[in-house]
View 1: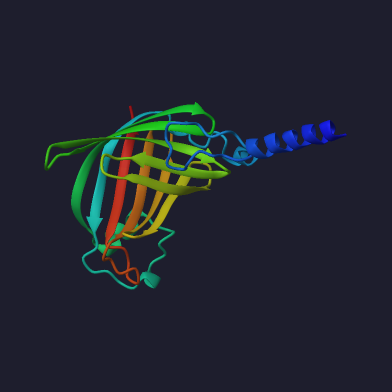
View 2 (view 1 turned 45 degrees about the horizontal axis):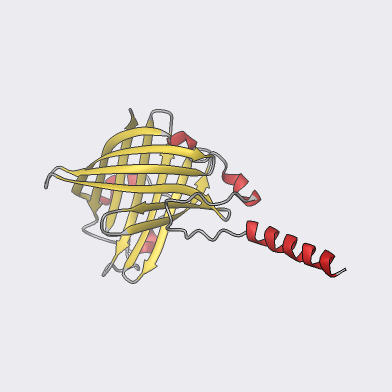
Length: 208
């Protein structure tokens, strides 16, 4: 009887352990173990596989208005034109995506800043872990983590909300067979979150 109880205890421990990921979210080396709840996001990243090149543009809103006057979850290029945003920076970007499983994709990002001639290489992953979507990018000076949701078949929304220091971001990324479009905004340290975002972002990359 004791032996049978011991076997059941070991089995329950193994089942419980197999259902838990002990891999940290910021770990981009190890592939998390699969869980049944990951299935809803199966192959969500596969459309990104390959090489993309384009420009990432950064804009500043010189006359912020009340945040309540803008639907920050429903943003488009027409909003940029209506707000008369000023372009303040431009980055030439190359991104290479490689899926290893239907739930785990590696990415290498090469950012080139034409004004300073600086090149920055970052590595990261898109992954499904514990039923959630994550984008983790390790830059030379920081690790950036966004949590994701889907909108329709080809759009992913990535967000982060950090307080010390303040980094609140929202990116809507839509992928088609030939193009990859990003539109978003961000609040950073010192920005008033009662007003519309000070910084806005737009990018359109072409598949190579």
